[in-house]
Length: 244
Image (cartoon, rainbow, N blue to C red):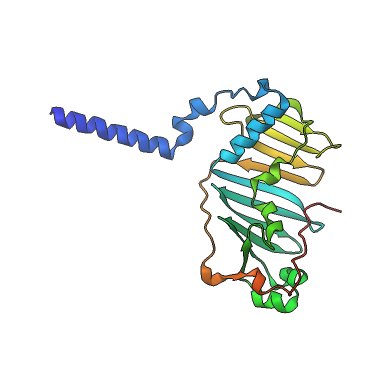
């Protein structure tokens, strides 16, 4: 009977651990809801804490609206550790970006690729994933799959008010229009992650940390090296992410 009691206790502990893993908000809410002290920190250290916390977050979904080549677009980026995938949609085009390891992949239509590499090369790419090193010809697309996109700031950040964002308290950090014209809203409880970011009048992002994301490279048979299809001596035209 004693052994049975021990086994029951052990089984109960295992069930509790599994329950906590599946319902993290229930088992860890007391800890995650505690104030993180970000409101007591000077602006620059507060911003750095927010950057570090957001960089360290394993699973992040960033949803935004911004101009791409002068056209209004929406983007959803899913970060999974160091990897990320993004879908960018506008009336003009839709394209997908994946970044894994040292490679970046872009998939789009023939019409999308034509201004970048020419019509014959665009047809040869078709709907395959164009591939390059992250610092290669497709480096401009890192904008959509790199968390550093959200952290461009000057050394003149100021603290604003604590506001409510969908039930979450957030500290406002402001980089004036004379600098990067950006505003960040940082969680004041749990980890001081970024909850929202705006830049200028046209770029707006929100961030969530509740889903588990899985990002993998496209199958080898569905990729093509961009260096093998682009016009000799040319490079893809830049994707402009600021409006006119």
